[in-house]
Length: 517
Length: 111
Image (cartoon, rainbow over all chains, first blue to last red; front, side):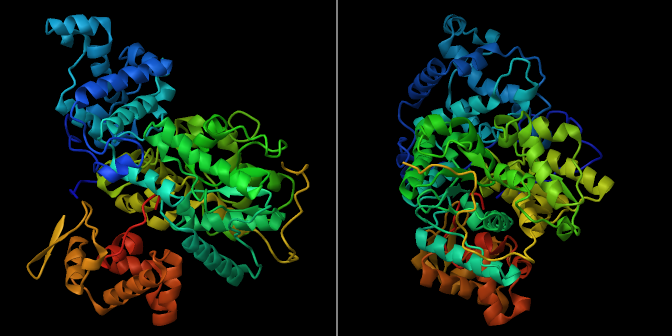
């Protein structure tokens, strides 16, 4: 792995002068034939890749009116240029969203617009910024479409609403379909199909882990909190990223969910079949794979006979769940209509706090001063609760209910304008470490501000990718890896069990009604 | 990547993980450790590597970090069990570093 310099943190994020070519390279590892074929893609680069790529691009723009508009409507106004964390962190001009989109747009113009078709005959395609699809262009796609986390911050500022994520997804979809996929993403999707989750944790290992956590919780608070697996007849199926079973600080979040469910007397279960909330099918822009992953959740819900589906702390999973689940894997008419389908764990916890169903002592978290990192997919692609902006207020309300010390980071770095952690969109792999560290810079800058001004000690997040990314990148910027924590760790630690009478978790769910079919 | 042990070339993945787990040897572990910027494998390093391998042999999967800390605590006491301690010896931790040296696979995903 090549060495690189970590960007320096200043008083605020300066828009850097572009340095052409600094992030040129071969991109992330290419998927092996077995990883490609498991997803229905050609094993290696097909012989007629140029023709195949153009035909796929034509197909995508035909199927998606949105993509065609994104290809046609950019006027190069430049509003997006300084909005991307990867441009700010790397200074490579091809990481300006407009330029990254143009890698695809130029080829679209050459082959798929009347002007391009005519001008290219006379060698005058440059007049309209069109280019032929050469091997160099293909490599550029692979490289730069893996320097975009599909976070859509640039889209917030685009006067035409061009969605860069859709362009990146189209780029990756084309690459997959000509046999040049990304190893990390495609290997992981294959694991979900064969084992049930990204990490490839088989059921016995999962059961063992959960049992270990139960022992740990009981040692700690002397209450027999359970983490049930494949419990038929449970009311709630919790679908959570598999990192919650394995990684730090994610596990503390899982413990938090379990404690909340236990104290509220809710009857819940995890599933070994749907032991993964993450859906990398979205990252690679593959509807078919996204659907195949989502269907596992439906199958598990039917098999276990649950009434509700709740998602754990995972950013893009919540986008897939909130925005697409019903069309991907619906209809969910077998679930209890009194609850949102699906529901976010924070909506559950928020409701329980409001209804006084949880006994909380925020002084338990007095040794910390918190800030909150809005995850890109939650912030810009979903909502929580019944009101607009609930995805911003509900996590903060919950944190403030369980912590006395809380400060927001600067306003232009949170909420709708939140910066990506730098590892989203299928880039959370070691072969992209330089991109990840540099892309984390704007968030690190904002964190530094509240650390210095307000004495913030910890940053809470609600996304498995964000948590892992920060645990790895915080040390590059002079912070420590344990300064990133799960929101539900804060909740779990603040729960009071003094006069808690242990009873079988079960029928305390007063709002549930009707038998499921 | 490749590593050379006793004149024999052993195939590693692009990120330096052992492809064929049966090819592991202590000499290979020393070579992988060098890639991970661990200049010398001390007894404390070996204790972790051996525990990780033992767990994998018994369970068919690598240990979750907390489970591993518990095992270390039982055998070697509190001072030699924390995540911090493991990171102090293996710069990127159990899952990404100690297991790599031990010739074990890596569970990928958001971890």
